[in-house]
Figure 1 (cartoon, one colour):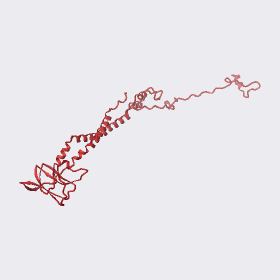
Figure 2 (tube, rainbow, N blue to C red):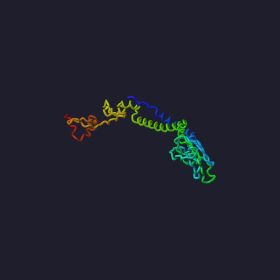
Figure 3 (cartoon, helix red, strand yellow):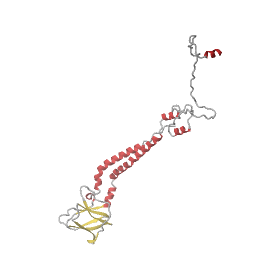
Figure 4 (cartoon, rainbow, N blue to C red):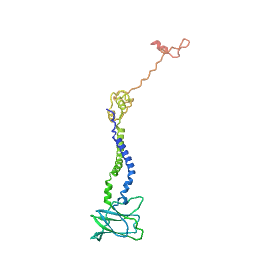
Length: 283
């Protein structure tokens, strides 16, 4: 049996790579946050701008959903949009198209006047009326929301930063999970060479001296990577024979004595009081 092989270094590498990518992504995102905010700034993304000059304005729009914004409050603005037919104002332009473009600039508040649904390139007539004279000073900003979203989606730098952040967020928990799995396996099956040598030697494990081979239970534990338990020697095992007692008994020393082991203290002046001398004489 060989010791457990070393674990693959890839879980740690994955964890370190995820932490590095996440750190780089966060740092890069802090520098590119301004560029990301520009995609939702009508002042940066608008393709047309119409000011209140007191006269009607002709404007050619491409197909798409055009979001019309104005900086500040739009309560004083009364704006109409009409198709130009034969050089004169025709039907009103369809409004209310759905768009994902929403102004998100922190230093300025924008109001959305309307959203124009343009199906094909067309010329429209714009008429601006102000309820309070001298209040409608800010221009109307026309932003094609579809073009703005496509331009943001094609920004390679923004995608690189976002990918680094997302990849780091995936690799960090993945590497941590793999490392935890390896540690769990190591705690269950890891055996050192010293443990194997000791487990194969029954005398080092204080096993029974009369036992020459391991028992089935000890072999099973050894294969599973566990240390075999030393069996306690049973000193009072019942005899297998009904007419004989084979239990090991401790031998007790016999007491010896008599006049042959000890000098007699009797003399003619001090004879024994019993008649033991007669037994000695008769024998």
